[in-house]
Image: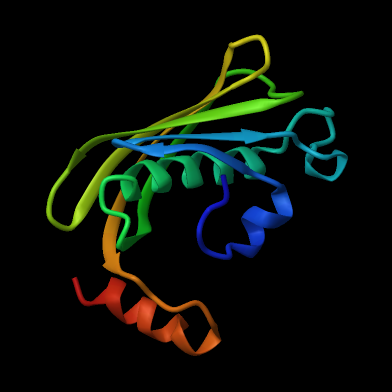
Length: 143
């Protein structure tokens, strides 16, 4: 299942959206050698991106005509992550304009490697492209 929109960084990492409905999401991810840290485990930045996208997808799954932007995110790294990874996102609560979410990354043995909570703001769909960057920033800064 694809993401429905072009997200270049997500494409570069190779995320595969496998669940997107009812306040839940799942993304499968096979880290490439260039996604690893000096300990040969998946880099924390790649894991945070995976968690962020899983939470955003969970938030969007209940209102697919709206986009979301990350307001805040807290991440805990519990153990090194390697091999095939699965991120499961969940919408915990929502208001008219905000989504409160969580996500966990599991390794191929089913062990939790990283967990995050995040808050997202619903925004009207924003066309992708450089000319719309200021519009997105304006939307964020007006509230």
